[in-house]
Image (tube, rainbow, N blue to C red; front, side, top):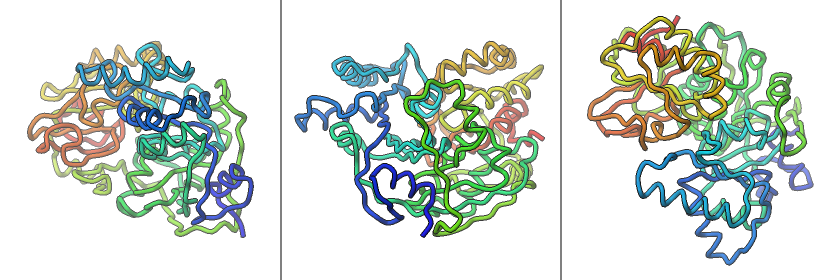
Length: 419
C-alpha cells in the first residue's frame, strides 16, 4: 500500500513503515515556543525536575506577540523565556535584537527543513509544511514533554489531497486559494487531517503563497498543511544555512486519501472572508457590491507579512493617499523583510501614502496591541482569523483578504477589487 508524504516523514522518523491512524512516538527536529506559550512550558519543564533540554539545538524561542513589551505583564512574561534561554545557553533565541514573527523568521533562518517533524505551541505552526515538512501546533505541556524527551506522541493523520489546476489570475494569491478551500469544506472540514496541496497550480505559486496556504490549514481544522519539495522550494533554501540536511519525500501514486478535492483556480476571484468565520468566503465582486466601509486596513501577520505582501502594497499605494477615514497599518514579518522592503523603497511609499509601518509583531492579529479595533469598527485584514472580538472590541468586524485588496481598500475607504 502506497504512502502519503506525511506517512513517509513519520516512517523515516520512527524507523518503520506507518500509515494514517497509527499512534507513534516520533523524534522531533524543531520545537518552537513564543512569549505567550513558552512560560507555561518552562513551568512544566521545571516541575518535572528536568535539568537539561533533550535537544537544545532543536528548540527555538521567538518572542513575537507582545515584544517590545507593551506593559508590565508582558515584560515579566518575556523575562521568563529570556532567563531560561540564558540558563540553558539556547542559541536559537530571538527577541528585539533579531526579531520576527516565528513562522516567518524560522524558515528565513534555515531552522525548519524539508522532511522535518516540527511542533510549536502555536496553532499556526502548520505554516512550515510549505517546505515539505510535517509541522503542527500542540499545547504548552506537550511542548514541555518534547523539551524533556526530544519527542512526542502523534496519531498519524489521514490526508486530504487538494488538486489545484490552472494559473491564478492577477491579484489572486495563495491566500485566496486557502480561503476558497475553507469556504468549500468549512472550519472543521479537515479535522485532524493533513491538507496536501498538489496539482499544476503549485508551479505558479511562490514560497510566500505556499506559506500562506499552509498557515491557514488550521482554519479548516487541519492538523497540518504540506507542499512537496520542488524547484521553488530548492531556490528558497539555496541561500540558507540549513540546520539539517533536507530529507525529500513524495506521495506515492497509490497513496490512500480520505478525500480528493479538485479546484480550478484560473477563474478564482480574490476571496473575502466575512465575519465571523474564515469559512464565510465571498468573491471580492460581492464585497464591492455590498459597499463595505472600512476604518482600518492591516497588512501583516504570519499569513501575509512577507516581502511579496509589502511589494504589492507598495505598487498599489505608489502616488496615492490613504483615505482620510482609514488607518493603514503594515507589519513586516521579520527585520530582514523590513530591511529589504526599505532598501527597495516600499517603506517610503507606504509612509508617503499615509500608512504606518511597525516592528515585526503578532500584536494586531490577536487583538494584543498595535492596531486594536474600537467599538463597531471594521477592518480589512490580511490576518487569518475573524472571530468575534479577534482584533479588539466584540462589536468590531474583521474581513479577511489578500494584501492587494487591503491596500486598495485603504485608498478607497471601502472593500475594493484591486484588479
